[in-house]
Length: 59
Image (cartoon, rainbow, N blue to C red; front, side, top):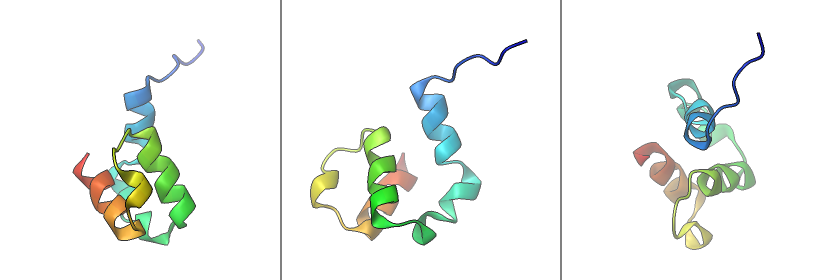
């Protein structure tokens, strides 16, 4: 049986799951920025990598 497509929020949850949170610091700024965009975090254009990580973790 084919797998159901994941909703946007399910995709975001799988990308920001508990295990990935520990690895956010290891990702490049571009990867963290892209993830923040996928999660719809406002104001990310002016954020630093640590600020983006904090905003992602608050989601």
